[in-house]
Length: 330
Ligand SMILES: CSC[C@H](NC(=O)[C@H](Cc1ccccc1)OC(=O)N1CCC(N)CC1)C(=O)N[C@@H](CC1CCCCC1)[C@@H](O)Cn1ccccc1=O
Image (cartoon, rainbow, N blue to C red; front, top):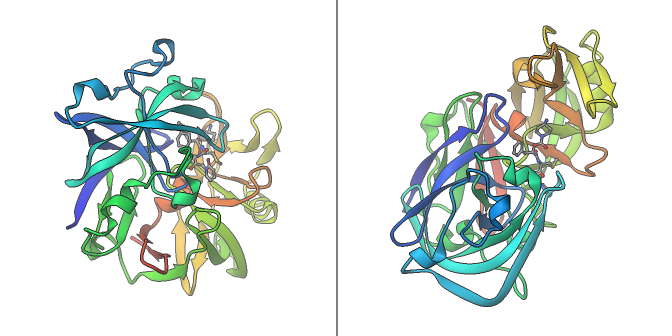
């Protein structure tokens, strides 16, 4: 089997990308953030503390004839941006892009942190990282990808994210109409559970490409591109007036600045991120100071190829026995 689901940016800054997910019988549809940087499928629910729900769609297990409590199971996640959620576990029927997992672990939130409460565009997450990152106790529960991979024509899902418009996630098929040229594959290190790969270098604007190994993760759940200090400094050195602002917690520049393209290498292939994607957004609404889409990864401890990078490419997440990532321009 194979399937496809549209994914849309939740706002004009492409802060995150959500997909409609059907849960239960009859179907309850929630908008979840497909996150390759984590491995829990969790949702706002009828069990979530009422004061922590603010406009999100919720999953009500008691209204589903196919829901089952997993007795004794709990979960708790904490993300890189310090946001958190926790709760209990049900199994139920889950359908994405026409593909159904008949008994998917659905982690039901009893409590969520303020940043989730304040984001009415996201009703939860569907993690597509490796099982080792799943937070369920006393034992990890399989991801949606784990549960469907055996039924897929090919053990893959692909990401075709776009700037300010709908893209798609495909399951079980590689749609060659969605990219140009050919796919270049690179090995994935699944320790500790991310889609971690080594980029072969970078180029800033028209400057010569620098061949150097840059280890990072392909993370659909992270908005920006986070790389080593040296690369980031070299990039913003070409943007007059750019500075690394303590006030705003990162590199900022005049919104009117012209930003150079940023190229990253995958094997012998090169993916070009248009400079406009690195003009992420005003630091506050209406400000003429803009926050960069390329930021320093030092405080994170890992380089992250987030949406700013992913939306410049067509990416194959290959979950075969030898996991790998395929990259193509589009
Ligand atoms: C550098 S890890 C920071 C990253 N969270 C972000 O990227 C958020 C995403 C966002 C933005 C706006 C609204 C909603 C969500 O956005 C910012 O942090 N932004 C954008 C807005 C900017 N003003 C500041 C910078 C992050 O924890 N991702 C995790 C998934 C997220 C969690 C929050 C909800 C959405 C999904 C995850 O894959 C990151 N992960 C990756 C590896 C290891 C652990 C880990 O946990």
